Every structure is written in C-alpha cells, then in structure tokens.
Amino acid sequence: MSEGVLDWRLFPAGVSVVELIRRAEAARSQGDLISAGNWYFHAKRRGAVGVGEGISALVPGLESAVAQGNADAKALLAAILLDRRDDLARAARLFGEAADAGVVEGMRELGFMLTNGVGVARDPARANALFRAAADAGDGYAAFNLAVNHFQGVGGPRNFREFWRRLQAAAELGIPEACAVLGDQLAKKGEDGEALVQYVKAAESGHASAMFAAARRYRDGIGCAADPVQAVRWFLAMLDRGNGDGIHEAIRMAPSMTADQIREAGRLSGRESEAESLLRHS
Image (cartoon, rainbow, N blue to C red; front, side, top):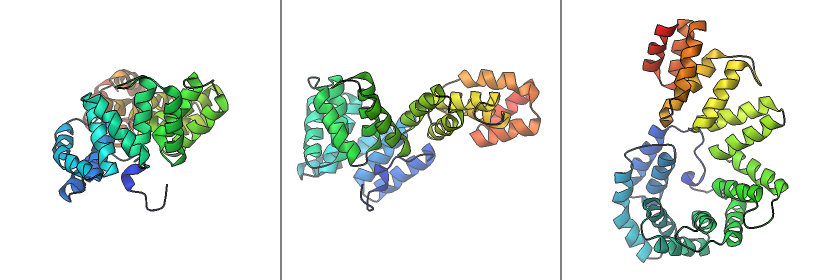
C-alpha cells in the first residue's frame, strides 16, 4: 500500500476496543462515513457490542455515495449486507464492482463469498486470484485467507511454501488469527521463544486462544522465564472475549502469588475487580 494509505486499512494491532469505537465515532461526527464504518467493523471483530446502531446509521449516506459511484462506499455497504446476511446477491455485486475499481476490501470479501459459496456459487480458484491481488496490495486478511486455502488445498493443490509465505506476511501486518496460527507452527518446530512473541501479538489484539496459549507459556516458563504476573494477566484478559476458561487457571495460580503480583496482573489486564476476587484464593 502507498504511504498515503488510510489508517483503517492497516490492521490496528494492539489498539483497544474503546479506542476503535472512539475513532469510529469521531469519523462519523466529521461526516467521514467510510472511515467510521471501517473503524466500527474493526471494533466488531474485536468483540465490541452495541456498534450495530452506529453502523446502521451510516447506511443512508452510503446508499447516496454508492449511487454516485463511490467504490469504497460500495465495499462498505456490501460488508454491512454480508454481516446482516441481507441481500447477499447485491453484496456480491457491490463487492465485485469495488474489486474492479481496485478496492482491496472488495477483492477480499468477494473472495470470501466465492470460497464459501455465500450468496454466490463456489469458485475457490477465482477466490484465490482475488485474495492474491488484495494480498499483493498489502491486505493482511487476504494474505491470511490465501494462506489457509494453500494449506487446505482449496482452489488448487496444497502448497506449504506459499502457505508459510502468506502466513508470515499476514502476521507481519498484525492479523491476530495469522499470528496465532504462526505461533502454533513455530511451537511445532520447537521455536518456543518466537512462538510466544506471536501469541502475545495476537493476544494484544483480542485473540482468546492466543491469550490462553501465552498465559500457559508464561506460567510454565516455555520460551521465557516463568512469569506468573503475565500468566494471570492473559488468563484474566480472556474474559474480554466472553471466555471464562482462563479464570479457573488463575484461581489455581493465586495461592502461589503475592497480593502485589495479583493486583499487577489485574491492572495489566484491565480486570482489577477480578484480581481482587483472586486475593481470596491466595
């Protein structure tokens, strides 16, 4: 992507949900519907609730922009239709028009629909061509989708070399799903320190499974020195994604930790009240 790329087109690695929503609402107040919608979708991918009203409020303005031929508006309106599973044929058509105009989100999302047969007939070979074009233009999610298809042999023969190349590219762009999968691959190769780096990177962008993997490694000292504060931090952070599996692990660790350590884990995770509850088990 060029130096002038809009911020929302770069994955906001490590940016909090609160900040993502703030950016969406700031853009909306300034009449920048495209930025607002894409920031809202970034927040929704992170598990934000209550953003649907903000997204819906953009639709009338997007319809006007689509009528005027705005390709970014076509991609965003299509994304809203796809998210709602509403008029999928129109969503595919709008994504196609956006893709023809060079909009990477149109390429990527039409590729998704073609891969899975959502609203259109399945055509994984064409999907891969779209993913490839978007990935080559710097889209991290397209690179990840292409990596998955190469690994699974969807749309062509399995190609582990291309899987690895596209997976690394997606991880470098901060895509949490890619970072988590790359962490798994590195762990299988015994590269535990690098695996932990990837798990933490994914965890910082809200990936619950990566939080769990990072927490266990900090707990057990795999790829790092044992660090109970970081372990409990990530076990507690899983609650942000509605996943309570980590809290049981944190309870087991609490008796071996000091009150200061538990409170620091709560501060780092933004889960101070849960950390105070853990003190009863210490």
